[in-house]
Length: 296
Figure 1: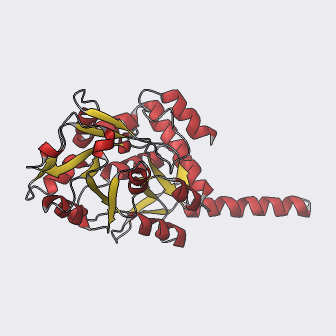
Figure 2: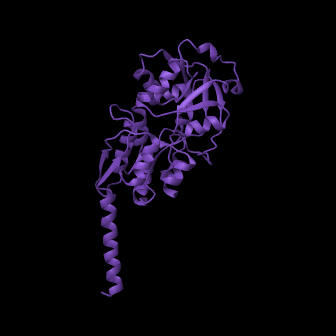
Figure 3: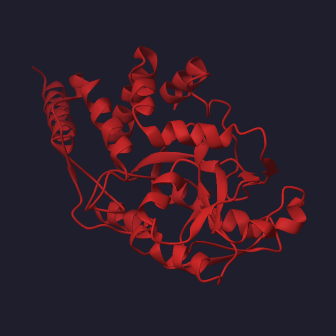
């Protein structure tokens, strides 16, 4: 065998073993450690790896330290974890590699207002978007949603990350702010956790803007990104992903809120995201979603 050919074979062997080594153990970050928050995303990732056995065996472990979204980004960049999931924005997509597939069907961009139980009169159905902008709102200070609200002229302030968003709910309870916009996927679980607080979901309004929750991987792990894309496309094609989505009661409740015809809809722009996906509802646009995943 010629020397150049031998070198090529050796390099290919080293590369292949390196790829498999990357997949032996994958650490997934988490926001909270004592509940099922993020269980859907974890199950999807497990199904992705099960659907791509040709890439090698893999073991998923959860990072032991709950952390804010910004801290999760740093953790991936430092190499202390391999995958995170969160709402996207342009800055996050520059730092990490996004898997541009909206895990929650775009429902992260459908937000209802959590308000004090005795404050519904402050949010009558008839008020306009401009009038709604005069109400004081709170979001996590490292959430892309805070920028969305502010850039659309809403009177929103950021609050430090706290366990189960306790500080935000306390601000609503005590009247420090008028409302806490929460996405329709998570709000019902929130209210169960904060059942001791006199707060509720406003009955009349729905904020809507392009907002997608993705998996992210470090920028130097293209092999892992490819495996996740391939796995997601297979889960769409064989119906596994839709079945997983429908296992969660919170997802069914979210669709009920998002499709409520009695709510006034306030459409906002997401200035931190320079595109809109035409396959966000991947259950209705399977071919487009699969093409986008495999074409990246």
